[in-house]
Image (tube, rainbow, N blue to C red; front, side, top):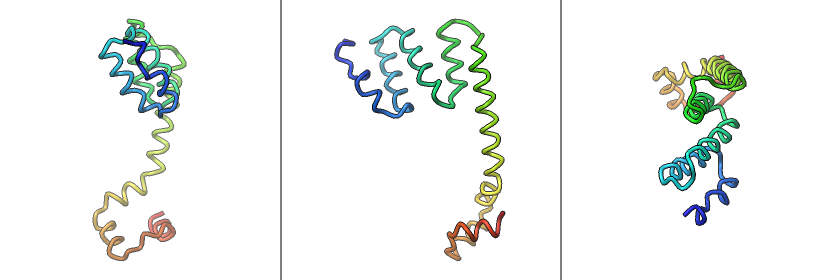
Length: 121
């Protein structure tokens, strides 16, 4: 059945995140050995910020609770970047959570980035 599988031919042309459902499908259908699919998932995840998921797959693949040091370091980097981005977006998020400010913006039809920057920076 794996001889008719087109996944290896189309996967290089897809976004990484679209390949995961295909790998899940192949794993359910058991067209390839689980080990091979799990290794493909880890290889795909190494290029994303989904480090925790990669760690979980690594643990299930190698039947251990230990993960490579580079995965741990990558996780620290990803979490630090996430916190920095959350901190940078805090003024915008707090503005958008203020229903009266958003309603005022809609009423004035002032969807101007410069006005938002001047008023809420």
